[in-house]
Amino acid sequence: MVESNQTRDKKSRPIERQFECKVYYEDTDCMGVVYHANYLKYLERARTEYVEDRLSSVVGYHERGFLFMVHKIEMAFHAPARLGDSLVVRTWIENTTRFRIVVKQIVIKKGEPRDYLITATITLVAVAPDGQLLEIPQEFHDL
Image 1 (cartoon, rainbow, N blue to C red):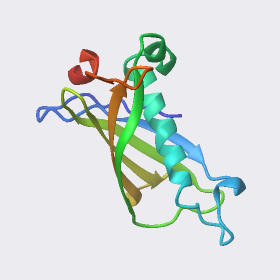
Image 2: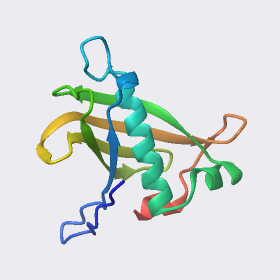
Image 3: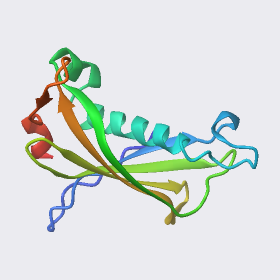
Image 4: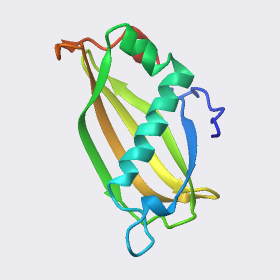
């Protein structure tokens, strides 16, 4: 895993984190390309690492009664990743509202940062263990 050292610039760009992973045989279909649903695993892992690096452990949020659920996913598939590729998932929080966190993610091949494989926008909500919708913790808004 590699973390981006970016900070907010003059235009208040959000801080990004980079997560590296490799494409294994189990991730691919019969043509040796990543099966579309497996990108969701890469994105989830990258979001978890982002939260744990920037804020607190996901387990810590669970212990505080915050369970984060995917509310909406928008993904565009630009090019396939293939068996053996090293990937980088770039992740940042685009914006927050009282009840939502909007996360932007881009998957690229390591060493080829201009060729997007996947672009995604994931909207998350927080719920209590009983399913009650919760307000997003303040620290997410501060990012």
